[in-house]
Image: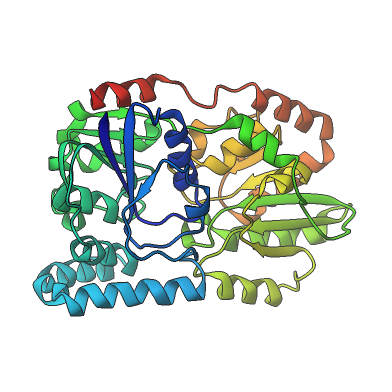
Length: 401
């Protein structure tokens, strides 16, 4: 039986985390002994792991790193590693160099610095594995590269590598230690190779695996929206981070409030560090009744089922699982024209695309409200899409040997 180790940064309700669980479901437990290490030791999806997955964390909390409690716990772990194990001193040059680079770019990303601290502060697994898989960029990749013994090593890349703020100064050549790199889309591969052109011969595309029957089943279970709103419901699912550009969505909703002839309400499922800032923006524009931050739902799919439009107005993506989930459930989709989104939607065939600004987003939503039959056709066409191919999974199994 082959021994596999998967490492991921967190195990919250994120797209990559759910894709990893779908990958677990496709691996035969009679053929593979699968272990999992969660670098932060946090995340709600721990309760949805298949029973045959061995969790290596000695301590684990099922709270989200996006909540206040979760952020405090994460900071505690960083300080324990940085101070208690002397990594702040040992990596002082690394931290200072990258902090200065971030300041020059006017973009301080403390989380990117913390990944190195957490990876080096975590205990090494005792076993040697047939394959060790870093399922996310950053901390998980650093950990697999430097702390794990394995016959083969692989890394997954889920984002636009440059726009997300990663690079060689942060990575310290961790990808040199990977036998293969899997990008979740063609655009993700393309952007990664702009940073690491030397790894063109060991990268391939492995689309996110999604359990479509499970999503359709869960969409029929439980409650979706709990208010009694009678009008057009817009849904967006994603973490409350700068990447997702909720500031643009809120401004677009302010325009819709003035221009739409029918009532419109926009709902967001997600948590994140920008929650208070977004709540202030919502209040300043008098949108408390029109723009609702609902937090995290263990089962978001009834909300997908009940919404009229799914809108994904983001700055960049790798390959959005939220868009794929909306497609599986036959929803008409509006997405902004950016990396990742472009690969998922054929404009005016299975959805619509627009520039990332409030006026364009608002204008497209108004058009979709006024053309319900066209939107119905978009949703029907989206359901017919081949969400992923088995090519990447076949390559993955071949690598295991």
